[in-house]
Amino acid sequence: WNNIMALRDNSQLTRGFWINITRKDLQNIDSNYNLFWHPDPVNSENHLIRNQVAYTLTSWQNDAAEARDIQSLRGAPQFQTGNANYFTQTTSPARDKGINPLNWPACGPTTPAKLDIGYVETCL
Image: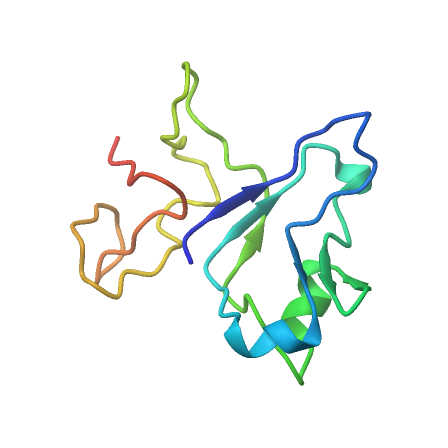
């Protein structure tokens, strides 16, 4: 929950997956409020795999039998510039889209305050 899952654009790696699970694993998987991103828009689909079947995020969310990641999004995280900086820009789709079940301190326009998806809460 509240993760940014990124696949690198690597010419040596023709296929990667954000999530790859088998039927026996499904009962132990609970995934939501994530941001999925691939830098290559042409190869950015079908990176969710279940029982060797590829899904887009939309088809993964709409699978009536095993719906997952209902509130998850796709898009570039838009990190602020800087070395190893995981703060997001104000236009990031990760801003204020996470879940805050423990009522951790958060900042943003939503009430109750929602956390950002990702490693850190960006308040700037």
